[in-house]
Image (cartoon, rainbow, N blue to C red; front, top):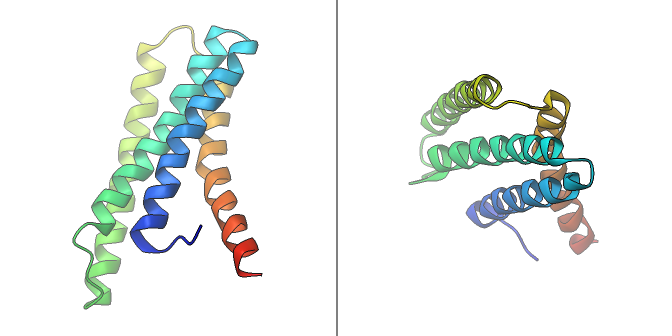
Length: 126
């Protein structure tokens, strides 16, 4: 599985949505509140990263590094704002909610999937 450029980004975001779904299903064992809280946390991570990827890598041209860096910086700021809004909206509108499951699954999806892809790539190169 050779992942480069937009293919790698698309794979990571798709895997994040898939992991969010799997976490939600796995948390059903502990109860519905944990399941949908975890699922929503994973969806927030995946959606925010999808937004960042869309804003950063569409019409990608490596001609002017300053413009690329500026676009990525702007996309990251927008991603953080959107993430905060999604968390705020979730906390205000959904009750009951497990904050631990929400944040834990957000962090898991945010960190685990890119690490898994890096491990897969590393194994292919060795």
